Amino acid sequence: MEQITTRMMVEEYLNSRRVNLKAYSFSIISNILNKHFLNYFEKLNLNGLKPKDINDYYLSLASLQLKPKTKNNIISTIMVFINWLDIMEYLCPSIKRKFKQIIKAFPLTESPKSDYLSLEEIKILFSSMNIKSFEDRREKLMIQVLLFSGLRKSELRALTFNDIDIKNSCIYVNKQLQSISINGKLNEVLVEYTKTNKNRVINIPKWMIEEIEKYRKKYIKEKNYNDVIFPYKYVRINRILNKHLTNAGLRHVKIHDLRHSYCTMLYDNGANSKFVQRQLGHASEKTSRDIYEHLTSKMMENGIDIINNLI
Image 1 (cartoon, rainbow, N blue to C red):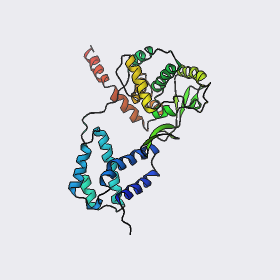
Image 2 (cartoon, rainbow, N blue to C red):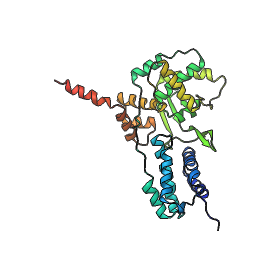
Image 3 (cartoon, one colour):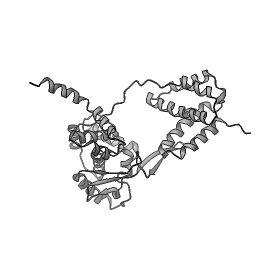
Image 4 (cartoon, rainbow, N blue to C red):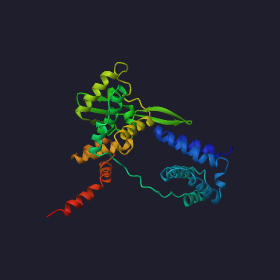
């Protein structure tokens, strides 16, 4: 009987996960196991590992120039794989136990906090934009759509004119354009689902519909309704935002922080939690509320000031 190698185990595991994972999630797991597990353990007999072998591996992970959160994602993926090996009886139970005892999460040296742009910062951002060309108009519209629709970056990249309902001032969100690593190369993949597997309808301001229409009338001369509105790669979108933030003299925030800015604006203007959840496509209202409460910690300071000034 042919001996099952470590590589064969990884391939069998990946084949079992392929059927129930989205393409993007599968590519991440595949890359982690091939790059951070197989390269180290391929030549070793997993059942013959000594505690020192596992500890040496853990130290090699610790030495990687990666953020603690990234290292912990690697550890989490590997430990799920180790558990699967145990279930399939490819691994001696004592080895699984040693992995659990030795491979521990790395302490987070930084607490990743979400950020957002205030209304004043948003006004400064747009007032600083000097629209001289068609590309300037498209960049401004892209940032407007991100800020006033709460679209995720992957959803924005898949957005077409067919997704815009001019009459009802809304956007139909039903797909994503993702950059997925396949065999070490980035590929643009259109997937017909959202992050939460639920399509949604986003209400947007009427003035934004007017801006999209102005843009479409110029854009449609060379393109059709099925083409994406903003044909930018992931990195380009980040660079565009950073460029305009720099020109406006504002601090840099991430693309996803524009989504948080939108969440904050909705709550600050009295929007219902259920409405915010629907607009942002969160799985629960709690997610929306938690983001808002996390972002607006200064509200506590303001509340204390109000109490101190009460007569």
